[in-house]
Every structure is written in structure tokens, then in C-alpha cells.
Length: 128
Image (cartoon, rainbow, N blue to C red; front, side, top):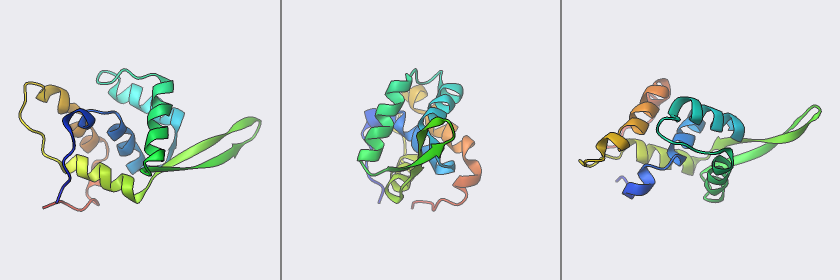
């Protein structure tokens, strides 16, 4: 049975980050750049906000990271989705959206995520 996701949290950019990480591991800066490029019209988010969201996702156990050294640069943290993160993302992805005058606001992120990760969606189990 799908868990209910509160309306406000269903609009959070954390789901876009979880969707990006469902495709492949990435660094925080890469995730921020992708959000700005692909969803900048939906969410206006600073780099520091991105890192705060990623820290919260990691604290919740939805994302895990490991440090990668770089030649002549400080090490970077590469993030990946955990099993709990994948479950949370799939629950959000398959959750029905209620009818609302705000439907236009709630529609773009799930549709975009579906279009963006279409090949990966075919491997996700369908919820009944």
C-alpha cells in the first residue's frame, strides 16, 4: 500500500534530486546544475539550498555518499540513492495527485521525472 505524501512535501525539489540519483550517482554540484537547467522554471534554488536538501536526504538515509579524491582539487562527495531513497521516490512517483486548482503546479515535476527517466521506469515495479 502506498504511503500518503503530504501535499507540501510532494512539491519539494527533493524528489527531483531523488529522481536524478535514481538514474545515476552524482556530485552535489552536478545535481544543482541539472535542476537549474531542467527545472529552473519550476524551482528557483541556490547552491547552498541544494546542499542543505542533500544533507537532509542523507540524514534521513535516502541518499548515501562517499568521498572521491581529485588531483589538485579538494575531494568531492559522490551521492547515490539508497534502497530507502528508491522506495520513497517510487512511492511519490506512483502516488495519485488529487484534483486541485494548483494541479498545474504539481503536474510538471512528476511528468518531467517520468519523461526524464523513462528507460529506468520500465524497471520499476508497478504499484497496485
